Length: 117
Image (cartoon, rainbow, N blue to C red):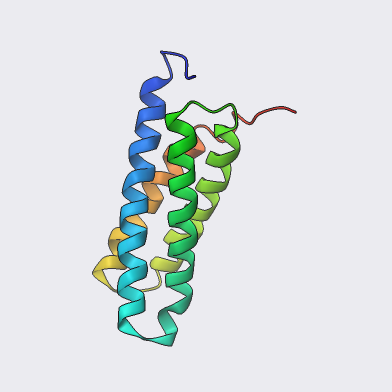
């Protein structure tokens, strides 16, 4: 479980993952509804990002020894998602980009806390 001094950092990361999950789901759904083949790449990375954000917030909430491993991947995928969303001028993409950037920063703080085998 998280040390009491780091619980706020964990909570901040959990909240950032929740926000990114929310906005990536919204963005993917909007991309799909547009039925524009050019938005397929955006929808797919959003779905990948939503999955890793959901998994990361779960391991952070339970204070898993492997939280750093999840955070490293989550930060990476969030940066990729933000980069893709930055290519589009849709409100949902802008919201997604902002949430993913914040999540990447929050997760990066824990990415070095990887579990040693």
